[in-house]
Image 1 (spheres, rainbow, N blue to C red):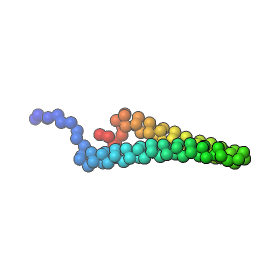
Image 2: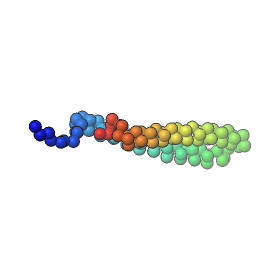
Image 3: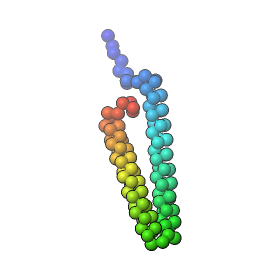
Image 4: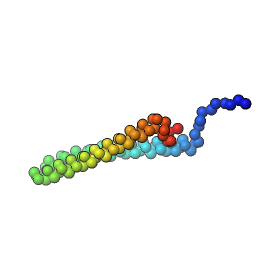
Amino acid sequence: MHLLWAPYLPPLSLFQDNQQFQQQLHQIQHYTGQLAKDTSKHLHDMNSASSSASGGEQRQWRLQRERLHNDFTKALNSFQVRERRNANFCKDDSCPCFP
């Protein structure tokens, strides 16, 4: 009996799921990038707006801006860590989403 070698081909539904997953992932990455740009611009605008405030108000603006900036930075760092972890997971051929 002769056995022919044939590469493993996952079911078609897995390819469709993979394409759908990749499309959703790309949309999330694009949306996150746009959100980061918009937020950065708003923080910059907030900085410009606070320059016309009085001394006490400027301090309040600065504290609020610093708090928002720190929260924004933490959120971006958290997203980047997860992105790297997912990329490494899929690079090791352990990812069920990428046959």
